[in-house]
Structures are given as structure tokens and as C-alpha cells.
Image 1: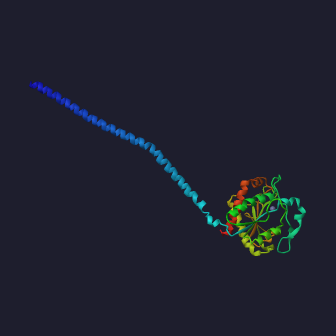
Image 2 (image 1 turned 90 degrees about the vertical axis):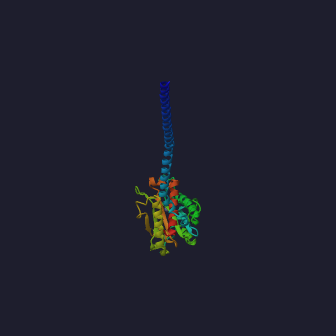
Image 3 (image 1 turned 180 degrees about the vertical axis):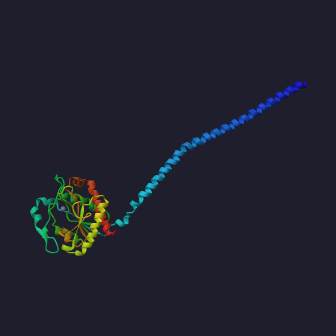
Length: 305
Ligand SMILES: [Zn+2]
């Protein structure tokens, strides 16, 4: 009996050892399985999180940086400085649509300077080579763009003519309108008609003292001319390559400037006889840019910057 008991004891011990090993192995497998699941979960949760976290915050910070870089130029134009409240601007769209059919009337001589010189009351102005746009119409269109801009900034605007269908007024009367209004700025809008090949670009004409009835306005008129020139150049409008210098031209033969008792300039906004420039001047978007620049120049002049 005792050997049977001994055999049974050995068998029981072996089975116990097997159960214990199985139990331990199962435990290891469970641990290993759990670890694997955790690892998979970590991988699963990390994988989609990374592109979401990295990409958007990175691009958000990039666009934030771009905004930070592009913001200053926009905010460098503080609104309060743009105000023209209390200011009076005389806007003179050169010539008039009815001048073409009233040559005799506009041809009569009128006072044109301080020393008894005279000039014709007015002229027809130029036009594009194909005749599709007259200077009188162009001047009127730019003025129509400019006036609401100035009024929006608080200015009182005095126009020297109220349509493009009339005749005149004479150049001396246009100066008188600005003087009578005690305008802070007198701006005469024109376009040129130069036949030289390739002649294009704007120029801002300011008066020399030679014929001025108010020579003390020569300095302020030059500053106004520089402000308008700078604004036009800043808007990408090319300065003239055939007249004046750097977009400025001093003259003593323009009645509207000679007779002005306020800061006054005459802008030739482009050469209508140049095919390329004529196409631009016929483009409403280009005229909007011109009006924007003219308004900006007036603001700059009146705020001394
Ligand atoms: Zn003109």
C-alpha cells in the first residue's frame, strides 16, 4: 500500500505543479495581453490625435503670425487722422461737355494772372485717339468718385460745375469759386493730350510765384502737390515720363492756379493720347484708384504728414 501511496503522491505533486505553471503562464499571458491592448489603444489614440494637434495649431500659429505681420500696415492708418471735418475742398473737373459746341463762348479772353495776362475762358480739353472718352467726361467721372470720398471723411465739397452737359465756367471763375469758399484745398482735375510716342504718366502742376495773385500760397501749393504726388505714386500710378520731374511740374501759365488765394494744384492724371494709358483711364477701377489717391493726398496735406 505504501508504494501505491507514494505513486499517488508523485502524480498529485506533478499535477499541482502543472496547474501552478498553467496558472502562472495564464497570468503572464493575461498581463502580456493587457499590455498589448493598452499599447494598441495608446497607438490608436495617439495616431489621429497627432495630425489634428500638430497640423491645425501649427497652421493656426502660422496664420496668426501672418496676421501679426500684415496687421501693422493696416492699422498704421488711424481713422481719426483721416477726418476732414471742418475742411472745405474745391474740386474742379476741368473743361465741360458743352464746350465742344460753344467754341466762341469759351474762347473769349479772361484774366489769367497777377500781371494783366489773359487766357481763353475755357477749352474743350483733349480726348482719347478713338474719341470714345473726352477729357471733360473723364475729369467729371473722377470728380464724381472723389466727392463722396471727401464728404465721407467729413469735408464740405464745392464743385466748380454741376454736370458734364454745361459750358464753362471760365478758368478765372473756377478760381473765384475756391476763393469765395475759403477752400482749404483747390484741386483741379485734368488729363493730358500729348502726342509724343510713349508719353504717359501723371504730373501734379503747382504755381510759381511769377503770376500768382497770392504768392504766399506757392509754398503750401507745392506741399499739396508733393502730397498728391506721393499718394499717386503710392497707389502705383506712374509719374509722367515726358513732362515735369518726379511727377511735379511748376508753371506760371495756368489761370486757375495763378488766381487762387488758397493752396491749389492741377493734376494731369494721365495721357489720353497714349493707347495704353487711355485704356487705363477708361477703366472705372483705375479711376477709383485715382480718386482714392487724390483723397489720400488731400488728407495727408491737411494733416501735415
Ligand atoms: Zn485739361
